[in-house]
Length: 399
Ligand SMILES: *Cc1c(COP(=O)(O)O)cnc(C)c1O
Image 1 (tube, helix red, strand yellow):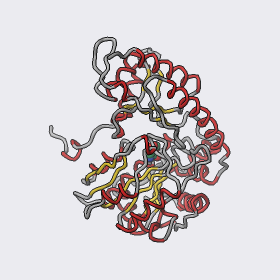
Image 2 (cartoon, helix red, strand yellow):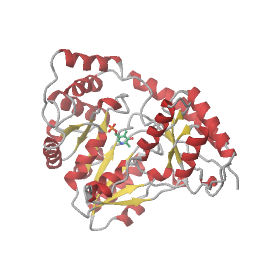
Image 3 (tube, protein in one colour):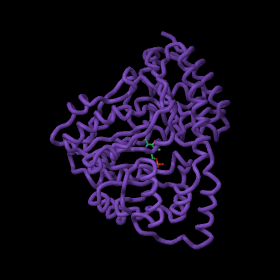
Image 4 (cartoon, protein in one colour):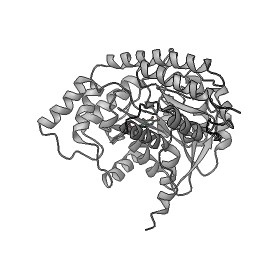
């Protein structure tokens, strides 16, 4: 049977594929260090878990409105005002099954066939594929480690054509951990406002910041940017709730009404139980987030320092999220002990997994050849063990 041509244009998520391979090796009894994980290694906070249990016990197990319960949308409005100074009404909020689902909804609602969507690279693996799924064309804006993986206003301006519909912006960024400063965002905002394109602002890692870095939402800059920015956030990363599946989007009313209509005919809404837990998370204490970030910070320092001491590896010190993105391009072209040539990051990641039992994600998955992504959402002990394996594995590659 021939499957849809829309589907054929889309690549499977490499991050998920490598994670599955690593898990299969583990099931087969192998001791694999897994650096591919894209989720906090902390449990969902107790009061949030209890709210989910309570929702089940009190019968909140039925359909909710497609865009989410009023209580949850109210909690999201309060959060956006409290943290970003953004004023939204409940009718401007649509709650979805994860931030990923929110992004897909917004792309579907805004993009026509053939529209161009600007995607700065390294990018989160799903952006380009979701853009293709809705019939639009991803236009990749490459960046380098020298500019800490940031696009410039000039670069953005030069990439805009009459077909450009929107820009995907992710700060703090997965996979690089890059955080745009307020001044840098102002430069981009001027170009966006001038061109009148939309921006999807993916703010999932908003609370995972180091070294005094601060998060700013483009939507909060001025009235024009408020109208052009579609804010996406979710509870997966900040509240260690990846498996609950809860994300949300906020933006101009017509777009959000479209997202609600679209969702009403497709997935309808995230689980009612999850939504009740989400209210508890957003309205509850946040001290555990600081504890989690404190631990991530300690790990980041150790991992960056160690990577930069390795031969042929250089690593930018990221200001946010829980990934590092070291440059390992010095190893491209070398041979494995078995004589196989490493032609790129995918070969390198596969070699490290199969031969050294350490799973990383190749940079090519994020549109950046010559890098690998290492997640430090795992214990210090595992980090040290995994880095030992990477160092030994790299040392065995020869000219
Ligand atoms: C994790 C993540 C998301 C959303 O994940 P969900 O689990 O669907 O909420 C969105 N963007 C980036 C960059 C992410 O890393």
